Image 1 (cartoon, rainbow, N blue to C red):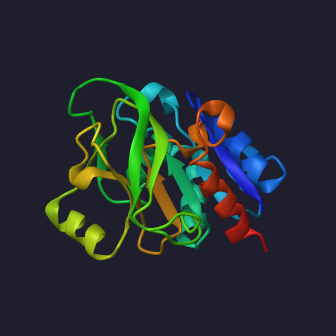
Image 2: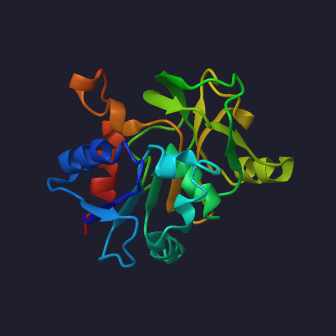
Image 3: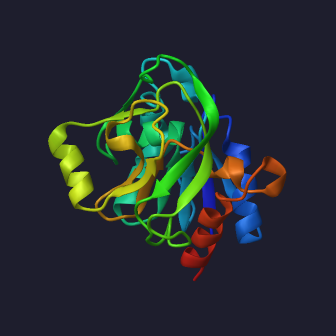
Length: 221
């Protein structure tokens, strides 16, 4: 499997997800700087968590217009799997690859803790190592993690089975307790929780490991 992690000024989880990917794939992913304009042949692209461009303007808004994002968007539209975690989810909504927005948390405070999630969609390439209805524990660390979309969009996401993860106990006010969604084709996943932060026993849990192992299996030719 050939994977790449996009790195923006202010990314702070790029190395974490690179380590998780390397453990799953057996080799390190490529680290792609935001100012680059081309991507190599890839089976997976990851936009990591952090505070791209210091979260100025809106979280993810400036990163969505970085030079590399033109190619990221083009690859995603052609079917390359794309995973956006936390700030990466914000970037995906700002880039128009996923519907809705991520707003300020309902409690108006930064939330950083482990949370339980219900797996709502168990399907390749992202979640087929989980069972539908399974409860998993990932970490969250966000100020703008409150997912919002209009009623028609929420109905469409629910009706099309595009909610991938749902909070057991909503930490930020997200509509329908949504923690992660996929696009219509199922090759783009945006999620606020961090699977890479609980992908090793030394980190306190391994529930996130199944996602990266599943990706390595599904995307290995």
